[in-house]
Image (tube, rainbow, N blue to C red):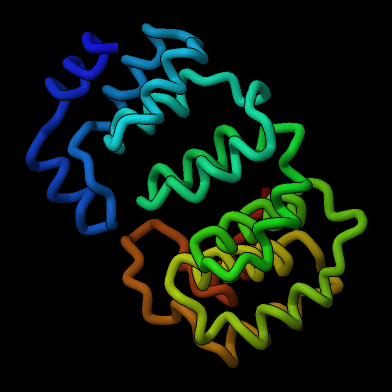
Length: 218
């Protein structure tokens, strides 16, 4: 454990930290180098648990990469998510651990309406995953109703997650596409988001149209 923390400290780079801090992350470790370290360590659940207990974001990210996602109990994952306050740790925890957990659906339902917007954003991220991969049983009209009523005034992280869900509904479900685009056009969420050349805008009407165009052309 001490050796691993020392290696993480060596990987710390002030320039990387400066870039990360603009996105709300508080570490300066290059993610490619972090993944290389994780590959060398392989899966080590006990070490992952100890790394998670540190107050260090790079250590938490490493813990996510070397843990065994299916080994966590539902309540453990709930506590971990509430401890994951920086965007990258939160994002990786949801995508690399919770989505692979047998408790994912139960946690999706619990987090979806949580009063904490950061926790709720995880519920929306898991819902977006289901919209894309297992939409059976989801009330897509009901989701669009919530997005229409709440997305405009939601805090950034929750708004971003709702917007992703809106776009995914429009991309994957032709019967809801016109409504999804219409909601995006009315709310104008992320309409002016600075998008680098060659990247797709996160503004839902543009995002939906572009992805549908690619599906048809591909």
